[in-house]
Image (cartoon, rainbow, N blue to C red; front, side, top):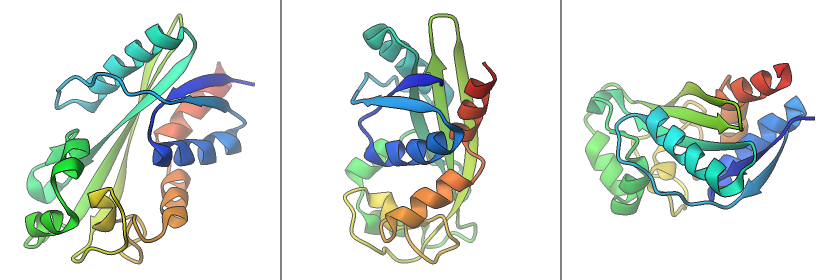
Length: 184
């Protein structure tokens, strides 16, 4: 059985990882981590920098994630800066930014970086969602109230289980990592 450390402090990312890894027979141990995040427009560079810090700290096979949110109607904004946007903006601010957009797609670029003593590898997948026209659900993560992975039936904030299942069933970077680990 393949095992690794998943270095994250994000409960939502752990739930998605657990759903996919359990199905693949891959085990991980979550270790809370909050690493210095470089400023870059490239999520892969950010994830690689974080996984190198994690490997140095834990000295075991480790994976980290970095999600970017690409809104085509806003020329790719906010990209890898979504974490900061959630700190600065409320759901209504996101709605104000996107209210006049015809293209209501929001793409979550899910990047996983893995490192062990011999290998560094990056897995990436784009998962499409839509921007809602009204905030729905209670959350402390602003964009969760205005983004839907199920065609607008639920916001991310309204139905956590549906959101986790929707993301974990789509071919995503966790599937790529698990498939690769199974072949090692």
